[in-house]
Image 1 (spheres, one colour):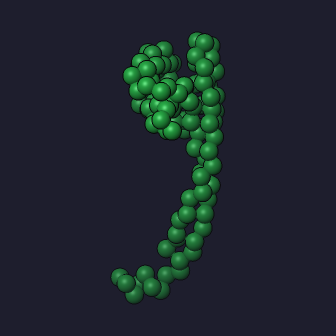
Image 2 (cartoon, rainbow, N blue to C red; image 1 turned 90 degrees about the vertical axis):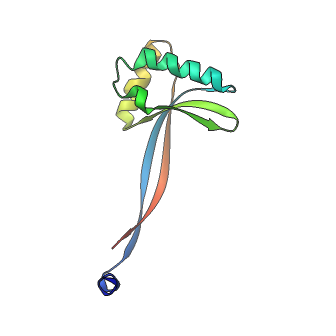
Amino acid sequence: IIKELANQKISKGSNQIKSIQIQFGAFSKLKNAEKHKKFLSEKISNKFSDFDQKLKIAEDNKLYKIIYKSDSLKTAKKVCKFSKSLKIGCLILKKWVTAEFVYI
């Protein structure tokens, strides 16, 4: 097996991966973030079936942020538009991440 691997070509590459998230607020107390997360789940999960599973609380810089990880920008826009119709503020975050990979 080692000889076979040694004879195969290895090529490196990189690709950019876009991470789409929606932020529904930032709180200094975990208790307040948990209450808001529960409120969001009750209001939005009826319209978007996977909403509750993708809604998380992330700690960042001593703040507890409520984050929904979206599969696409299109879905993120739909979720945000619906939440705004309920007078719930949201912010779509787009992040580009470079991923390294090796082909064997």
